[in-house]
Image (cartoon, helix red, strand yellow):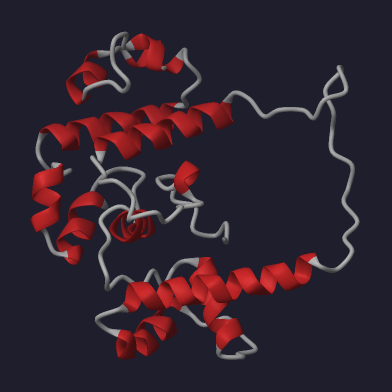
Amino acid sequence: FIALFPGRRFPRPADLLAMAPETIRGTGFSHAKIAALHDLAAKAMDGTVPTTTVIQRLEDDAIVERLVAVRGVGRWTVEMLLIFQLGRPDVLPVDDFGVRNGFRIAYKRKAMPTPKELLVYGERWRPYRTAAAWYLWRAADRAKVVRTTLPVVRAAGKRAPNGSPAQKTGCESSRQLLCRFHLHQLRCLPTIGSVEFRRSGRIFCGDSSAGH
């Protein structure tokens, strides 16, 4: 895909829109992903997707409203942008599985809270709900560490003919490219300080159920 636009790390929106869909399809992208790319490029050109300068002046809700208008970009995706790229201090991603599970663990609940329940409870954490989300993620992480100390029997994975682990190809690589294009076109700022964002490879894939 990137090779279709020589001399650039990522294509400009206008260049992408000028490229024939059949040509992009030949690089492995599905029709749905091509439609998402085209919509993102079009909205970058019409100003729906704000520039770096503009996005820094917008309130959190305004950023969410503008970016969820892009095909394939949901609220969770924008919340990850707000936290990990823009450093906004008062974001609570209530649809995130890791945050909800961390709440269940930290508060010793038997059942997973619904997003609405967590949103209501989280009002007491304003204006520092991002910090609360970090603590909830860490609670979920600590529980995973405890579980990994127990012996686990793993199923044998498929191996390639040469004996090495089989690698996923095709659709997965096109998904990664789509995510990278989203990241570039949304013009994200550098990550906060020295924080390592472990989801960076799928930040714009919208997969909020993957955990942490």
